[in-house]
Image (cartoon, rainbow, N blue to C red; front, side):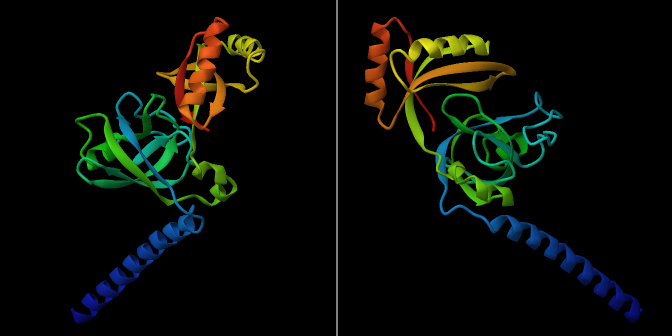
Amino acid sequence: MKKINLLFLLLLLIFTTSCAVKRHHRISYFKKYPPKKYVEIGYASWYGKKFHGRPTASGEIYNMYDLTAAHKKLPLGTYVKVTNLANRKSVIVKINDRGPFVKGRIIDLSYAAAKKIGMAEKGVQKVKIEIVSVPKYAKKYKNFFKYKKIYSVQVGSFKFKNNAIIMLSSLKKITKTVFYRKVKINGSIFYRVYAGKFKYKNSAKKLLQKLLKYGFDGFVVEIDE
């Protein structure tokens, strides 16, 4: 009987040790290339049943019960710690999708992650994001971790790319810095046209006044560089 118990304990020890090694290997692999510092504060939302079972930007199938999230810029495969600033509850999630495409929000959590930090009922909550680890390939993309904000003037938003390009041509006669960005909102693609890139909001406001004189309409926005 003692021999059987001893054999059982030995097998259990081997199993638990091998599992621990695997987990440690995975964490050390990601932590080999961490950025120096990355802290982001803003509003988080979450998405659930509507997207459950659909492919994410990473190619993984979205599962609302997994601890995952969508972020606009961080490399897919990055792990971040998300802290609910209202109750200080935290959760570590894997970035496997892009979003949120709503002004003022910095991350879209899975339902399970939102529930972990006590925001599933509220829907939107102010949070702090800190990087835990990044995938190996991300060392090539240092700009991901700068995450600078700039001010610009949004002049138009079009369903057709051609219309955005036509507006860009007109804007170039007034200001040199013009560009468009492709965004996805509620499953639909839009092409947003911007003029100017400024460090200060007042500079963007001055350009807006100039554009209004030329018959363009628009408003100042804060966007990622």
